Length: 272
Image 1 (cartoon, one colour):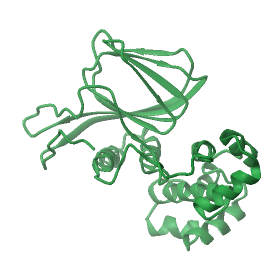
Image 2 (image 1 turned 30 degrees about the horizontal axis):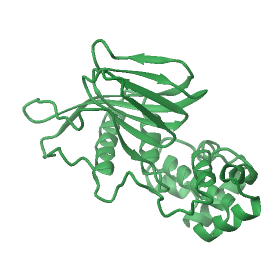
Image 3 (image 1 turned 45 degrees about the horizontal axis):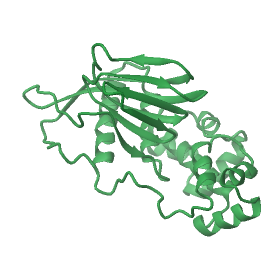
Image 4 (image 1 turned 180 degrees about the vertical axis):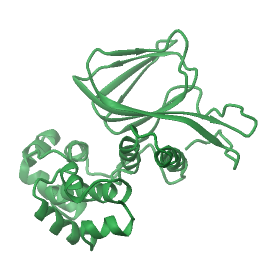
């Protein structure tokens, strides 16, 4: 996707910091005077943020959006949803001569996360190591930043995702994928698509080959596997963080989907 930048082996990423949280409507961040101090990637888990640049151009970002924020860019940002959950990765990028590498001159929507949740996985891992300052986590954040760049730079990654999805249920599917950690009833997915529950369930099964609730649980298992593979979460912590309240059910379902127990996943990846 980043077509105007020539990456070489001399690409250096440093001064990485991670900020995440929840903000209420009306809160603002103002860089109109001095400009942004670092490059940044902003990922919106849920909610909405609106950016205004020096020309008053408005950019609105919401659920699943990944936005690039250029170093030195002057802008004002306002949280415009009742509640917005987000994560920002700040970093500097330069070549072997210590010259800044510019990915984009302006604030730009880089990607919308798709059903594989590639961006969400990386951002989850950023959050998991954001508060620690050990050598391991410093290197981990650098690794994740390179991985994020590699993901959005991959030719297979596209801004246009799920274009082939049945439009009749697209809003309900979007709601499910953005709230899969919550136990929303299928009626809410159907209402989001303005169809009956039976119509939504039938169209969903035709599209995905499974029921909405089983699909939701697969997303939860995928998150749990990520937590067990790349963090210090215990099996119980990974289960609860992935939306499962019953540990026994979680372990049985995890094995059914992945072919191994949660404990085997931890041991295999040498997570202490």
